[in-house]
Length: 212
Image (tube, rainbow, N blue to C red; front, side, top):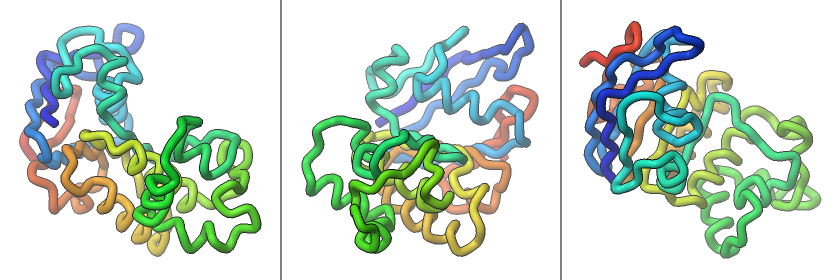
């Protein structure tokens, strides 16, 4: 699904973070965006996903323009997975009725199945407050399974492996490969090497996008 960003600007308390962003993305294209921490990368993804309302300009995903419409078309995996104080199952389905085969497939693709099998309550195991009873890598893979189960046409990635150690990062990257296959992908990072296989890499600097 196409993503089109036109004349997008955004400010916090009068301080401009994004300045006249223009970014057309074709369906199934993968785009990496590099930039320093605090440079507006996460803000851009939150605007695209509909978590923030657009102040100036326009973002369209397919035919969806409003924040509520765009949210239906995107799956987001952030640097620190946001888990509900609920079971693994509920964190994948977000409380929605979902076919068991879809949940099972999502767990398999997110590299979760073997670990879940070892748990006394399996997929109905409680993850704790803020995911406190699972590791960072497990929490990230649950978030990826949630995104896989949603099966949205656009995937937004915000430094999804930066807080993980090497071995865990490899497992999460494998899960991300399953999530992003055939999707339109926007992946922001401060590490350009992670984005080396993407169709395009752009640089966000002082609120503006440049070819990298």
